[in-house]
Each structure stands twice: as structure tokens, then as C-alpha cells.
Image (cartoon, rainbow, N blue to C red):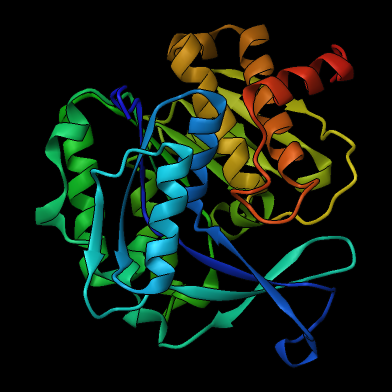
Length: 328
């Protein structure tokens, strides 16, 4: 792509193998459909579709599955300079069950142990430092911290970002299936939160990490945070942004399935911040409208299957918000 990426998305890209019908176990699934996914990749693709140049920093296998992922990134227009390839470690594939209401559950991995997939082998010394010279935001989750090699790369990326005054956006994205020791994971994630400028987490993650679901209380524990957003699906999103607090109700849509909705929310948030600047969070009305925009992007992703395939364009989001009017 010709435009320098404004946002760097750091972490895994994989295949979500989603059950074609509701089921409560892998053995009960009659057929599956594979969709490109992985939270950081989802965010990068959603940003480009919204009109914000983005790069993905990830390690993908040199296998057929990996080649297909690269093709998808190329077609969408994601900057690939941060992509590393691994000659022997396979591209991750994960089974995803879904309920009758469209909610999904990660049920396990295909073909290898969780620590053997390519995304765990992201190398710190191969990170392209030049990408960090022009970016405004670094978006990352916590899954990469579960493995020693990728953890070192994540720590290096955060160091590079801090050196360039890049805003660090942490989406906790807690997935127990990736971690061996959940107690140790909690302590590590709490330490990572201290590196973030913006923190996004689900209400369940907030309760697990902090024993509260009030974003203002979470923010009070981390003075460096400029924003905390806690999403609760159909219950909407509560936020604390540069001292402004509020709640945005969820949009009522016909849900197909929810994979990637939270990642699209993050993309909508960061897209608006790239346009308006972090200073917009200090204005109560602008902060609320930014969260409402992010919620619209997330909601529209649930009306179709898959994460990346379901993401809306900027025009679709604007049309949707126009139809929804100026409600809460």
C-alpha cells in the first residue's frame, strides 16, 4: 500500500473454524466453515476497510493455510512489512462452537499443541523498526504474551512504540485455552496493562482482572491510562475517557454470530481517534460519539458470519448510524 500505516496491529492471524450450526461440543458438529481471523489481524483488516492505513505484525506459517491468509491481507490492502514466515511451524487453526444466540466458544486447536503454531515464534529481532517511525497507534492483545518467543517480540514492540510516543491500545482478549497457568497469566496481564494508554476489555475480563466492572474504578488504579472501555455485548459499553464517563447502548441487530465483533469495536475506536486525535476524548460529546461509532462497527460485524469477511465499510457504518438517528 502507498500510505504509511497509521496503526500497527501486533499478534496472531489464524483460521477460525466455525461450526455451521449451533452445538455444545466438537463431536456434535456436522460441518465447519473456515474464516480468517485472529484479533490483531481482524483489527488491521477492519481499519483498512474503514479507510485507515494499517499494518499487521505477525508470524504466519509457510503452509497452504498461511498462503491463503497472506492473500486475504493483500486483497484488503493491509501493509505486510511486519509479517514474518515460519518454515516448519503450522498456521494456527482453532475450532469455534456457536450457540443458538450466535455467541461463540473456542473449543481447541487443530493439528498441533498450542505452543507449536507459527504465531508463537514471532521474533523480536525481525520487527521492522521503520514502521514505528510514522504510526500513531499500536494495537495488541495478550495472547502473544503466553509464549516466551512471542512475548519477547511484544515487549520489544512496546519499547519501540514508547520511544516514538505511539499510543498503545490493549484489548485484553482473555482466552484461557492459550494459557497453561491462569494465575500467572493474570499477574502478567496486570503488568501489561501498565504499558497501555487505552484499555478495552469485556465485562467478564474486568471482573476477572479487577473484581469490578466500573471503568472509572479501573482507570483510578492505573494513572497512565487515558481511557478504559468495558463492553458487555447486548448490554452496551461503559467507558471512562480522559475523565468523561458514560454508557452507550448496544444497537439492535439480527445477529448471525459474534466472532470478531470486539475487534471491529476496537478498529472503529482507533479509526475515529486517527481522524479526531486523542484530544477528542476530553470532550464529553465527542468521546460519546466515538464510542457510538465503535459500537456500530462492532454491531454490523455480527450480522454476517466470520470476522474479517463480515466487517463493514465506512460507508456502511455511516449509513447505519444515519438510520439509527441520534439515540443512545
